[in-house]
Image (cartoon, rainbow, N blue to C red; front, side):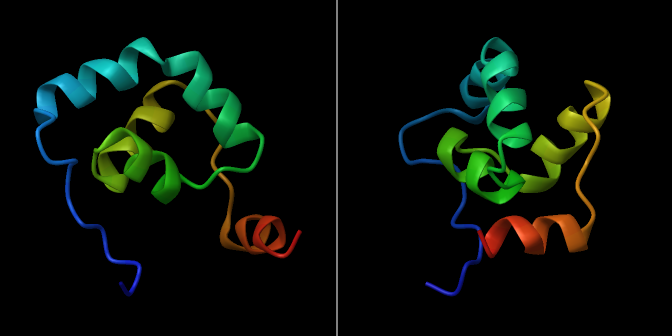
Length: 75
C-alpha cells in the first residue's frame, strides 16, 4: 500500500464511526497531542483524515505544521 487512505473499515457504518470519534474526543485529542498523526487516527477510527482534521479544528486543538510533524516522525 502506498499510504493512500483505504476508506472506512468494512462493516462499520460511517455514521457510527463519526459518533465514535465524538465519544472518544478526549482520547483522540490526547493521542494527537502525544504525536499520533491525523492520518493514523483516521485509519484507527475508520474516518477520512480531512474530516478528522476538521473536528480537531472545531475542538480548538492546535494543529502541527509540517516541520513539527516531520520532527515527530524522526523520533
